[in-house]
Amino acid sequence: MWQLAALEEYGYMDTDDGLINRVARRLAESPNDTIDTAEFRSACNASSVDSDSFTQSDLDKLQRKLNEIAYTKTI
Image (cartoon, rainbow, N blue to C red):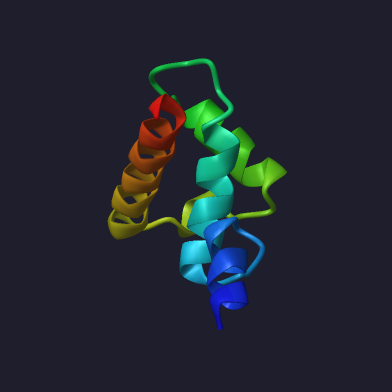
């Protein structure tokens, strides 16, 4: 069971959370502090995720995931 959670965590599953994690990991590679729409769409495209499918709730989850990734990089 932990293997499935790890796959989702790193964006290898096509669940909602997996897709959000996939985009978050791509965006975390950006040197920019602020992500604009073009960069978001580019990250989605590179991750094979439809950027238009994101709801506000998805964007909130994406922000939390980016914050989590940034926090773990500082440790």
